[in-house]
Length: 380
Image (tube, rainbow, N blue to C red; front, side, top):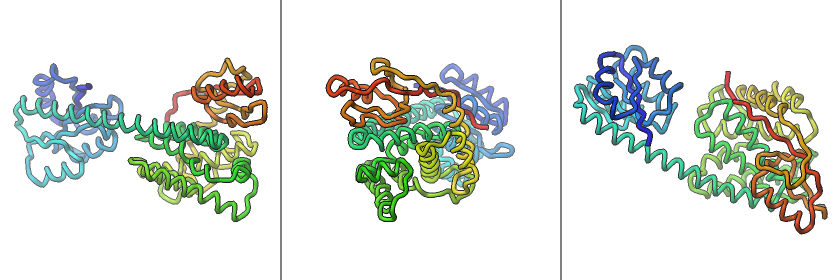
């Protein structure tokens, strides 16, 4: 269990005393004032626990711990101050979601016990989050496998959308990026209700009648309704529902549902341009003047361009397929059955599916794949 603790105070002698008293028991880091505390959270985190003074020049401890909560939500927060008035205590608890409020002078052993308890709370929070993410990812993987069998075209598109959303969320340095990835993986699940001819023309960017457009809109609602029945996927379901909604808000990215739905829209529209035969650069240039895209996501598209343009293309045999490769062209069995659509990332299950058909019906070879570049994505 991590025992990393950040202590923030504007008095150096207080910080030195904390190091003398608790430096051997915990992995203690100190910050003199709020500004150093913010930099420590950004550059040296994550910490299991943050202990902060209340009265400091500039940003007070309550505001600092509220910022810490947004920056690192799993970090447990403790207020240590000589100003033990009830109003400050209530504000600290309500605004900063403080785990414990202690007053100076605080006996060293009491502070140590409080930090120990807070570190255990941090361990439980992390364990629950990891369990939740692994459970949801496993559930989503099963749904995706079913989609791949029922509709390889829709599954391949979802794989491409997931890749673009991963790149955009990394560029924006979004918290809880896993939920955006899940939304991308499941944004096409409602396509199981679409007739195959409508789905094929939709993916190819061909004109649909008004009645067919209504059917397509219904699949988005169906996807939302299916996902909303799964515990803890309510936000993901709302993102899926908003995948066709244009951006009409400010430049902020604090609302995960709005930004998640917006990433899906940008990724889907970008993918539509590519399936219609446009080059990556031309597709991105054509989207830059659109007012219904979030400005930060239009900038993130440039990052996608760099990654896509650095990918290498190969023609390989079935025995040379490896996880992580992405199909550049559809993979067909020799009887014409579509096995894997274009743009699908090769997972172990997809490779096993191809190998299974190779032993029975046969598979058309060679298979054209790309190996995506993986540069570090950084924001400006």
